[in-house]
Length: 583
Image 1: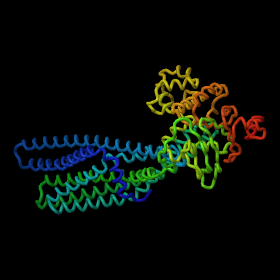
Image 2: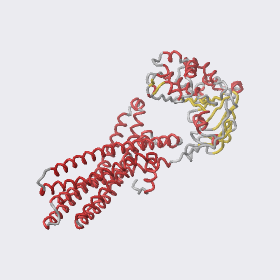
Image 3: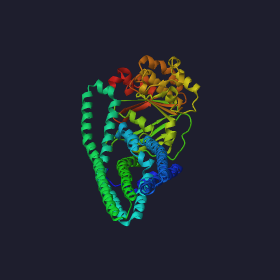
Image 4: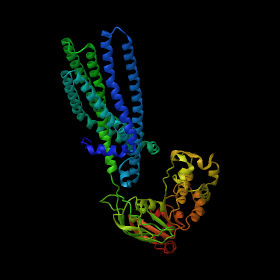
């Protein structure tokens, strides 16, 4: 985290996300330059006011000077408000665009990435780190340049009053900026560690809030809270160090400003005593020196924001540079209708030294139903994940209707292969959005027809607003069976050529499961289906049976033939029960 960020990374981000807002940035620059002019003019007016008050008998010049001072001050405030509004708008648009790009990139990364990173840690990257870049995008460059111009403008005006005072203040400014930059490099690593700890903490928090039911059911609440407090204790010293880094910059700035004021006051007193400057000029010099504290302080705070942004830029850049292990295909089209499935010498393992599937060879004809049986850990779910290209095989190939999965685009593949699992995700939104995933091309009548086919007509008609009724996140208010049936409806609405049911009926009671048997049979027409099951009744519709054991095919054939063969594993399951066979 302490590595130095090359300037190209800063300029690359600014160029990517601020270029579309060139007009707003130009207006912001004009407003800030206008503010600089106003700040430089006002001390000149005050000097005129003071010197004129000593020499002029008429009060008219003083009144004009006062009116001009008030007018310039009001105009400066107006320019400041407008610049702040535009700057915040620019920053909000830029950070939202970056946040969207990072979120979209995370959605494209393969499952191995998501297994290695908790949802909370990813959210902290997408939201927390990018929030730290808001000021960097909104006005960092323009504001930094404007403050530098303000300092340069004041130095030029001070040189006009005398080279001694001008040179003294120039040395002071160079010294101040050098010291602030020197102190900054000690604080940068602490902010990086803070961001890393923040990511760990919110990853832990999100994970355990999501699994709070299991935590409480297993009596692990005390352990979770212990880890919670341990992480807070780890966070505190990092926060203290980061605060001390900020405090050191703040205290250093105060000391520097005090030295600058003392130098300006001393030089002005000497020059005034010599008669080289007027009392109004003394005030103007002191005013400029005081005013100089403001842009230097802003430069300091921007350097502080930049040190926070340093860590966030590194983390966001690392995330954006993370490449998915699953690369998109060249775009070979998948045929319409049912899809045949072919595994050719497929070997796969989640870890390099562990093999989950060994040399799988099988062919499932289009329009047929394959029932997959096996013990827990035999590779049944892994087979389903490979068909969706959540992972790629270590060797061998998987083909749908003769097309290698790696040659089809991921979008088309996952549009043509539907998956229903036992874990149902219901999102906060309308019934329509939960079923169509915001695909507006699916007509309401089609949605209602599928719901009726699945026996959900009574539930649908009980909804207060029909398809516009809101569902709670996590499926609150739905029974397990209703949530499962909605997941069936999602898949059928996407009209896939291959459907994978991964223990999809495990949450349904036998009566509900029997209720949807006929509906599923109708919906499976002209589609290929892979059914992964724990109950024999679930695969009663299967044309073929595949039995896996420790990642190897131990039996594959037509269901009727295997049932008639007393020596087959499937036949023995029918006799003694699958649970006993797979125990």
